[in-house]
Amino acid sequence: MRNQTKFYLEQIRQTMQRLNLWQAMPPAQEAFLSQEPFFLDTMAPEEWLQWVFIPRMQALLESHSPLPNKIAISPYIEEALKEFDGLNLLLAPLVALEELLQNQ
View 1 (cartoon, rainbow, N blue to C red):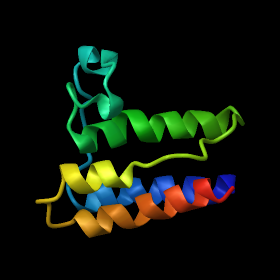
View 2: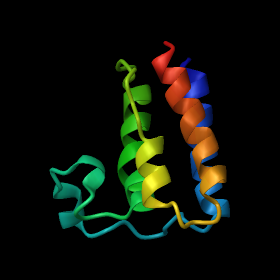
View 3: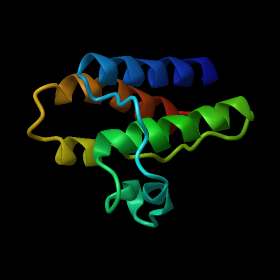
């Protein structure tokens, strides 16, 4: 389970890099202070995936903490990036991760 989670997180990262969504520089520190879901008011969806979601999931894995079993990221990404040509490529590992975690 944990190895599969790591695998899907890596797939998300690699897909974002291939689609030129991966950024070299993080958003401003203030962007991380958002209280909104997905940091809607301070980050683009791909920024949130890279700088918030992936690091938080990796931190849970590294600390051997319980993983969430109710996540729904793909609907947000699908809506927020609906005009993006590579959307289906990005959604594939996200949906697979959601299904894995929901069936644990």
